[in-house]
Image (cartoon, rainbow, N blue to C red; front, side):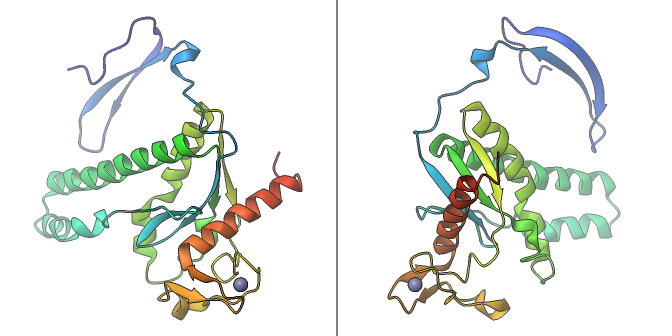
Length: 227
Ligand SMILES: [Zn+2]
């Protein structure tokens, strides 16, 4: 069957065969497409956002929008363990493919929404070891930030925008209003969602972090550290 029709005006350049993890074969065709099909409507001018990656709330923006979904790895964990115990290799592969697909689907949808809304997206660098060494490492894997960032990059580019990674060090402990480091810190601080700064500001931990990432992004840009 044809997974996707080749639209009119698309010129076939090359082709190849590939096999997926479930043993299904595909013909892949590379096409040259007219530019107007690639570029999309730009996000509103000057609409920038900082994004704080997290565990339960996967993405939080500096204007307070949060995106979360259930842990897909966890949802299928029992089914997968059972298939592996019974040595049902094909079934296990099918479950793994399901996990991968639903995570990818979610990442596509959210990165599409974000690229449509914001021109410059400053993404907090989640691989900086904030979670990697903790027992939440499995959850980090489930979030698939690397994929979200890849999708955001090209989807923003299509709209004339961009995604830039920002070192998010201290973003959770710094007050985004007075810039003092008054927020909850360390592993014990991870359980605290809302806090009050001595300047009187009440913060949602993730939204505050995203606001700091936005500010750090603008500072980095004005210093010319990012071309
Ligand atoms: Zn403050």
